Picture 1 (tube, helix red, strand yellow):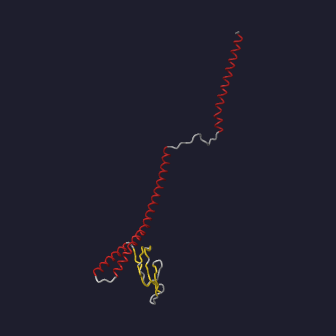
Picture 2: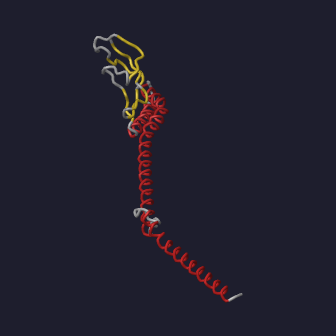
Picture 3: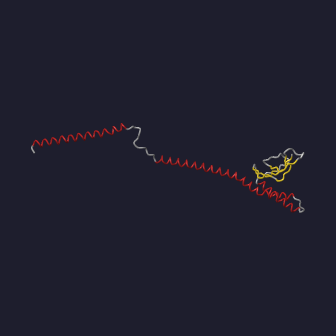
Length: 198
């Protein structure tokens, strides 16, 4: 290689290095400008990452959730308790009425035995004592007799089986009771069987 060729080669290498340096500098400048352009394009209102809730905020949210569940459970239990009390209050009169209804034939028979003629006074007194005990038991349970002789006939309390004419009594008046009726408060256990006058 001649001296001139060597100089030419060196000059080409230098110009290639300069071009390479210029290209690198240009790329670096573009890279520096690119984030600024991206920042300008992106709206400032949108954050890159959502803020994570702190441990305290998590505990507060969990506490509020548990408190809400507790209050709902407490309300449900209170409703259940009230419903149970109401059901018991409704069941008691029905159960008492059913039990008393089973004893009514017994009360009727004791009444007939007490009203029957008997020569043995001690026997009759014993029957009356048992009948009185049954009447006391009914009274303790709140059971009342329906026996309204001389009063206006009421179809909700009495059942008429016959009709008679009597000038001493008014129209639709209960003249005689064949079988006593019984009620517990407003509930009719058995209507009275009666004879109506006029």
